[in-house]
Image 1: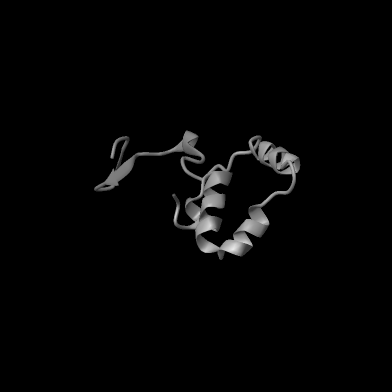
Image 2 (image 1 turned 90 degrees about the vertical axis):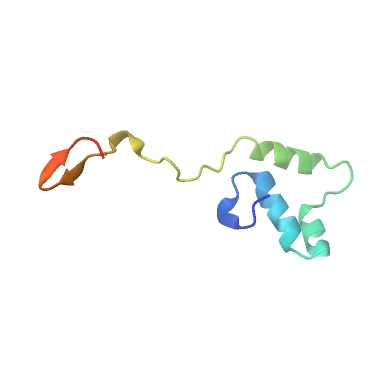
Amino acid sequence: MPRSLDKCSNVDDLRDLARRRLPGPIFHYIDGAADDELTYRRNMAAYDDYDLVPNILNGVADIDMSVEVMGQKLGLP
C-alpha cells in the first residue's frame, strides 16, 4: 500500500490511501453507495479504462550513455 500520493499507481491505491488518511465517516460518505450500487459499479468500471502512468522511463529512445574522459568522448560509461 502506498504511503503517499506520488506512490499511487492506480485508482485502488488512491482509495486505499484515502481510507487510511481520512476519518472513517468522511471516507465512507465519499466512498459509499446507495440501494443497488449500480452507479457506484458503473463509476468504478469507467475508471478501469484509465491508467495512471508515472514518468518512469519516459523518453528513453534518445539516451546518450557516452562519457568524456581526458577530453575524449567514449561511447561507453
